Image (cartoon, rainbow, N blue to C red):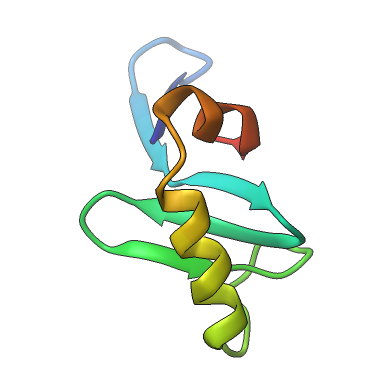
Length: 77
């Protein structure tokens, strides 16, 4: 998961934003969270309307990749 820190212009306030990692693999784009699992997303990175058997078959293949191979498919986070 990517964590981003922001600071206000006056330097008094800080913000922390944590985003799920986003991956592309075999034509599917999805978020992955270690506790919540995968979430298929559309072009705008919004949750997709449905996650069918084809998606979960591809996700199952992705899940068997090594940590380094998974990192190569990461596009955000």
